[in-house]
Image 1 (cartoon, protein in one colour):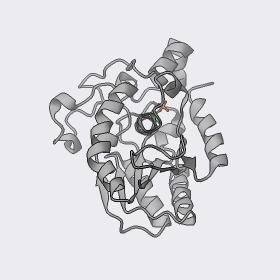
Image 2: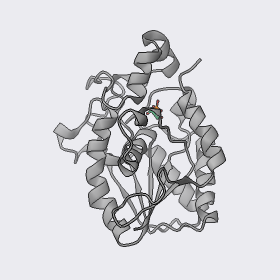
Image 3: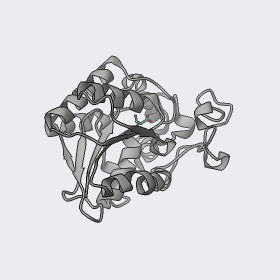
Length: 248
Ligand SMILES: O=C(O)[C@@H](CO)OP(=O)(O)O
């Protein structure tokens, strides 16, 4: 019931520089803006017209949605935003270089921090330059919910209330819903939708800027497991690029 379109933001400035980002509010790179435009054109060419858009509260997802909607001539769609769609909080790794981290701690630890289901990176200190504690956009977030680090299991837990309360009712009404978010918050959603086990999810990567479409049945289960990328070829090579981030 309903169509769900997932869109990871286009390349950010820190993606391009190879830095762990998480909740740091970095902008799109020029290439990322182009990816967002292409994503919007893919939506338009596929004849997909969302009835509503959801984004995180981070500007790389917000701007990706804006640029994609502009390219699809859909500027007017209603939009809702939630911190629950934010990227996984990367803890003390936020702002650190991925290749240098891999070098310093070794491949195994690096991949545990990047992709394991239940091991979070070390917590970030509240006085760290890359901490979000005290940012006005999180003023309504109960202090005990403000993360200092997150593993993917934490993201699943904080994202699901938004899925059930805000997104599912719109799908139940038969709408097409666009969610513009992040690599790891979308991995959390895909894990839930496709019932991916904790081990398999470590190998799943989401490419930037390519819409992933799920047709859902009456139980909000995908009719096709894994959904369908609107440009499968571009998705395959972009997935490889995400996988190899931090490699020399
Ligand atoms: O740095 C991050 O926040 C994420 C997404 O860009 O990176 P990774 O793919 O390493 O989880």
